[in-house]
Image 1: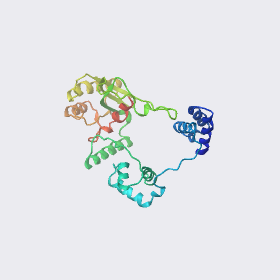
Image 2: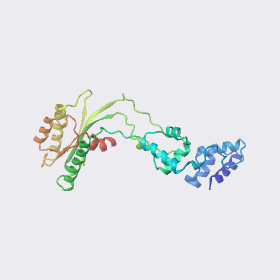
Image 3: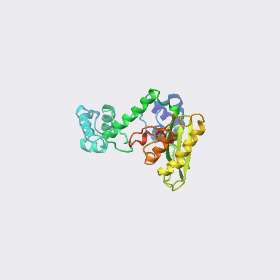
Image 4: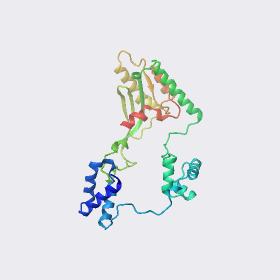
Length: 294
């Protein structure tokens, strides 16, 4: 069915005083995604009840579609290349083209879409980027060569956990009927109750979960005595025959993690420290995988 057929059906049903919601429910099971939206059905039903007879679109004033010329496309491309953050309203002011023409040129001809900037932990220098790649490749090669095994890796970090979780954006998605409002989730208050945990885990599950007392600062002494000591003891308990032999520990470059005393303690317990790229907390498995799931 084309749009005129849909409108004729709406016109007939509206003349019988059938509510718009019922008309939409009659159309959607038959025509699926081709069905006009509920808002469109309701609008046309209202117009027909008010006495409209025509089912064709009314002539619209404005500029013709011939505004979509190669010259205009090139002009808009140059404006966007010069300022990727420019708005459609600013382009409209500089070119004099209609909003619809700009939308058509940008999406259909230039194949562009507006994307929100992604926040990153730090703007790395060229050397830091190169070092980030080098260390990642070095670690990956060690696994591929069989020198390291995933089951021997212990990774850890600390993070705040709120008493009430609102879930990730994707987990809050829900199916709704066409025309119905989307679900809402109340934004978490910045003063909501929370607790700091230091968590270490392996490929087969958590090894140590340590709650940090409110107001406690995790300096190198606290990290060694309350995190690393219990971690090593737990590893030895789980591996009675091998102890810490062949165990590698991976944590980011936080001050307490890379302190000389912490490194000396891990080496004294025969734990190998996996190199971590500088200024790259986003590469810690806890941050990009575990904490997001929790």
